[in-house]
Amino acid sequence: MIILKRLSIWMALLGLGFTTWVLMGAAKKEPMPTPVAEPPRSPYTESVAASGIIEAVNENVRIAPPVAGLITKVFVAVGEQITEQAPLFQLDDRDLRAQLLTREAAIPPIQAQIQEQQYRIGDLNTQLKRLKSVQDHRAVSDDEVQRTWYALEMAKRSLVRFQANLQEAIVRRDELHILLDRLLVRAPRAGTILQVNIRAGEYAMPGAAEPLLLLGDMQQLQVRADVDEVNAPLVAPRAAAVASLKSRGDTQFALSFVRIEPYVVPKKSLTGDNSERVDTRVLQIIYRFERPPFPVYAGQQVDVFIQRDQTAASPADAGPSAPRQPEAGP
Image (cartoon, rainbow, N blue to C red; front, side):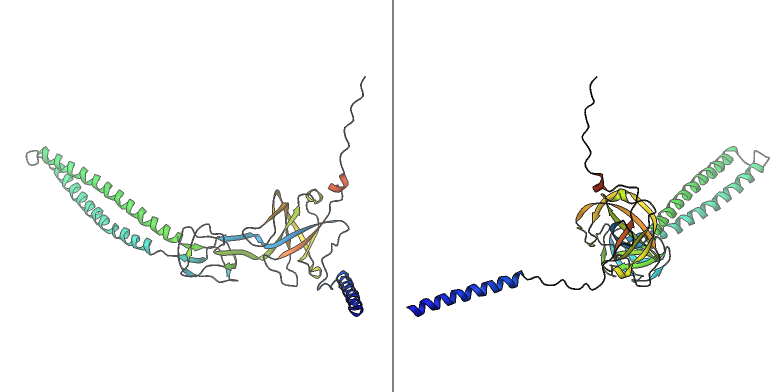
């Protein structure tokens, strides 16, 4: 019994020591790992930090189809430089081409009717002149002259009607030409194809969440910086600014002020997803920059530092306003 009691005491002490060792190991803090790259730092004494995204100048163009339809051919590839009005993709136009054949076939018969009526008008006009030139009223009756004149007038009215029918047929034909040209989607401006999300044989729908093609001018890039609405009063127009790739302080490059978009908009987390989470409201500032020696791409996130306006007071510096003292009575 004594041995069992001593063994239980030693087991309790051993468990207590093991528990202490585990707790001490859990409380020990691991050293912070060395960062892979130097984090970005502001070159200014006082600055406003913002998050930004690189985009093509004048923003990207999301190409959409004019109507729903089957895509029969895609003329461009990713990275291709295109000019204004260059063909991008073709929608199925077989139905319209079949209608075009019918409408084009209706034009020659009307033209033949017009030509025949013109010959008839010419004959009647010659006949009427010949009848009027006869001086002897016994040889040509007034009724014959009147009938010829009436036939000439009716022929002229028929010619006008046929010409109107021809004009309508031509307009109906040209309407199909316009609709056919509409199914060939062209580039609204020159630029670079950034994305191609369609293939021949797929069905295109207007208003799709993902653009069929994304077009941008990659010759000149710009940064769209999002400044928190609280810090918006601290930013002066044309203030100096720098940017660096996300969490890479060794990639800093200078920015040139373009404009401040005066409407404060909800900030998005820039994940690229359609259901991006709205964090707060931001003031957007557009900057241009020359291409740095390292590669940058449209859609890349950057850290932006804007030199703070020294004349503007920080919201934290303003403090609560003092209560208004009642005016002293007479």
